[in-house]
Image (cartoon, rainbow, N blue to C red):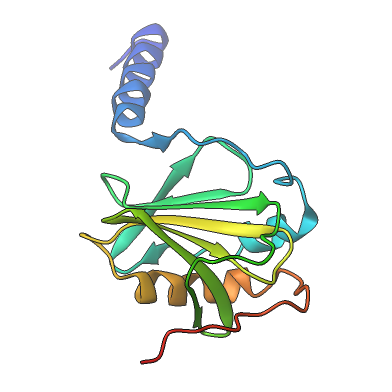
Length: 154
């Protein structure tokens, strides 16, 4: 039979061991992360996107998936104005596409406020699959009336 002190010591050792396995992704909160609209997005983020499981983040209104991390989401950014970046619509959400760091791509909502940014590794996940999985959460953001006017042809 374990004495109380030995039991507590064993319990704390087990907690420390288990918490060592848990990964928390360090991120920065966006300027409008405390928006109620971002809260509505955050509580609806899926447990997995394109086969990547969600992991903990340490910043408000953020999400991350994969181990190692392959998808990052940040809500609370300033909405983009007119842009020369390509724009694509996935499940009714317009996204500006920045491929300057390919194979890591940055997708930013267009016509939603506050804006959401999704940063993903195209070598591991499909943008269409990830953005599709996130669309029901992102759809919670109010629209501004702006929309993509120059969409790529499929």
